[in-house]
Length: 253
Image (cartoon, rainbow, N blue to C red; front, side):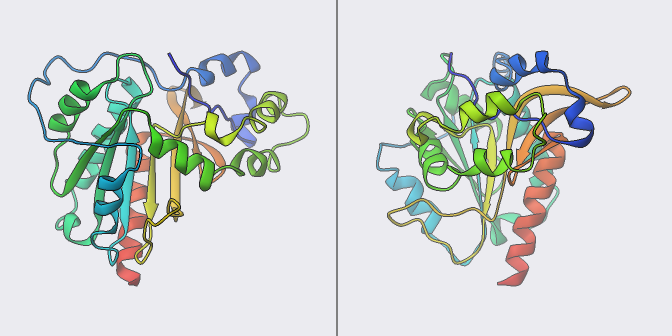
């Protein structure tokens, strides 16, 4: 099993998380099995290394903001994220007319494959969404290497010198970008941006780290790495914010 690299906690209340929790962060999202209720098959565009089909859909109408989600089809945290995105998207009338919605089902766990990607796509087939399957998670590699390569360093600049996670994060920042692949994440791109030789730069992004914590008594949340800042949140909150950003960008065009 491959592990998530986004294993961060923030300052303030988040800094109270003890070092022992960090082992959970390294595991990424939980690996709950996909729902047994999902049996239908949805057409999913399987991507080759060129990502031509994804690029073509991304560039089809650059006048719109585009939301791109990278989820594993068998990761429990990713499935929860897809549920949240679908739930929040279905609240918005005519969202598909104002925002491009793309879900890339990426292979990050041993249980991930195209069959599971098709099952997940059938389960989360809301209006306007386009589904893709990336067997090597080439999408995540490109975004990490070309757009987020400096994020470890920039995040470390915000952490106190005595932060318990600092040494581990310092080691992570020296990993070659090609060794790090983005997943369990949502990115929002503004109108006018096209995917050419290099991947496009997101206006907003969030990544689930996989660590659950209690910020308030009885209120357990997950640590997300959002725009280089670690925060305690929930996928429903993150999905709402992502869609708000997309709508804001749509209104500006």
